[in-house]
Image (cartoon, rainbow, N blue to C red; front, side):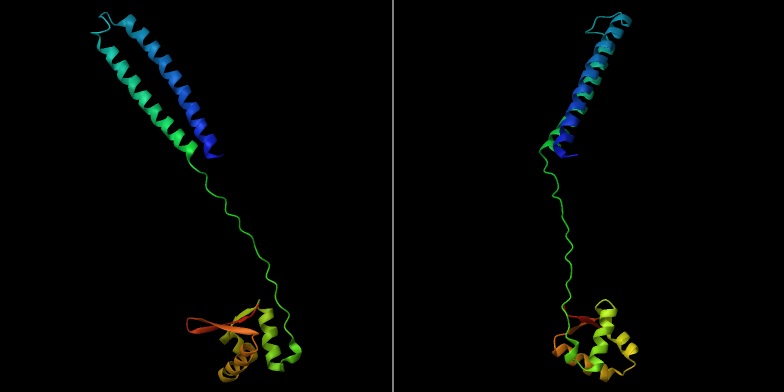
Length: 158
């Protein structure tokens, strides 16, 4: 529901409550008039009815103010989230050495990213060989390494 309509709804409910207040006020005056033997100016029950009426109207006034605030309050902007499809560029494997091809295939199988230590385990190679291999692929702009704490994340470039 828009804020404007909620404001009108609150003001409408407030109007109904005002009508109910005046109906009860008249009914209470009739009851007090028949039960109180004193004049209206002297009888303490009339004072109580007036106090209750003013208190009720003050509460309705607060409701009306809330309704007006709702009417002029701007609605929150809708956030539209669009997913952008990642188009992976085709990597020309023909110009790569066999170890480099294997790294690219592993990365593609892992969704385009893997920790360097995991890659080392999968290729069953040492740190130096993997580092040099990744240096070559990075120079050819096929991968990039991102530092993650004490580890490197190897990511296929898009």
